[in-house]
Length: 264
Image 1 (cartoon, rainbow, N blue to C red):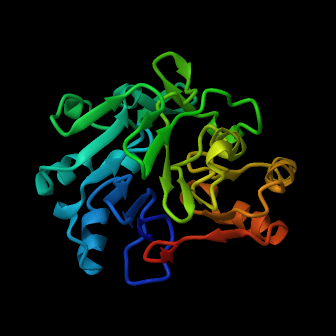
Image 2: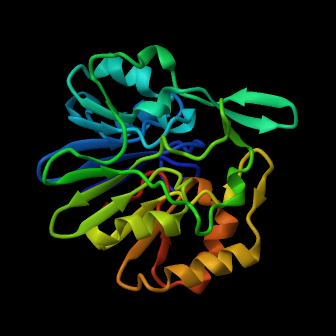
C-alpha cells in the first residue's frame, strides 16, 4: 500500500501547500482519493507527481467541508468512472460562525444527485478491502476547536463525518479532520485493530487561530497510550503546535506533510 499526501497545510517538497486535505492511495485492488482539497491544488500537485486522476476508481469525501470536498466539481471533469462515497448529510449547509456572522464552508450542493455520487447513511462496507464507518458517540475528548462549526440545526455534531478502513497485510485507519475526536474514532475502530492511523485531529481552530489547551492535549496522550502498537500520522487541522507537543509525549506520533509518502 502506498499513500501520498497531495494536499495538506505544510510542505517540505516541490508540492504546493494549502489548507485542506487529499491523500492518493494505491492498494492491491484500488486507486483511491481520500478527500479532494479545497480547489485546484490537488490537480496541480498530482500533475507534478505524474498521478493520473482519471484512473482513480474510488473517492472518499470525509465530511461536508469545502477544504475536503471543494475539488469535487473539477474532479468530475477529469474522471467519469470513479465511485464517490459521501455521507448524505455532507451536502447539507455547513458554516463557520464568528459572532453573528455565519460563513458558508459547505461543499457544492448542486452535485448531490450526480450519477457518480453514492450517498450513504452510516457505516458501509465497499468490499473486502475498504470499509467506511461513522461515529455517533463523541463523549471523550471532543475538541473545543469544533465550537465555531455549525449546521442548520445549531452546533455541528458531525453525523456527516466518515472514516476509512483499509484492510491488507496491515490495517490502516484514515480520517479527515477527526471532528468526532480521535479517541472516539479509535474506540469505534477497535474491532479492526488498526496498525496505522492517519489524519487530522482538529486541535487547532483556523478561525480563532487557537490551539486547544495543554490539559486537553495531556488527556488525549493519556487516552492514546493504550494504542502502543499503532503508528499515528497526523496533519492538517491538528496544527503544528499541538503536533509538536503530542510528538514529544508519544514516540509513535508523526506528521505527514504535503508531498510525503507512506509505504505500508
